[in-house]
Length: 88
Image (cartoon, helix red, strand yellow):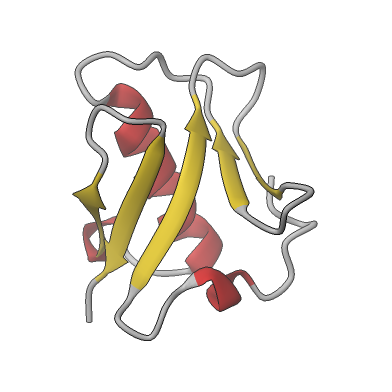
């Protein structure tokens, strides 16, 4: 899912934000770096009632080896471009 992302923490800004472009209803869940060096999340969840957003938050938490409760949405609830905050 994220084996091709060594150093995923490099996407975490000093203030604890992670910017992600989300593609819902994908064939499988995965995190990738696109051709521009940006982090992209593909999730199988549909973009309804926050399902895709929750799936991305869970995937980020697992990839960063932190509890799910530490990854919260900061911006972009209804947008494909989301900003998550990594809590202390």
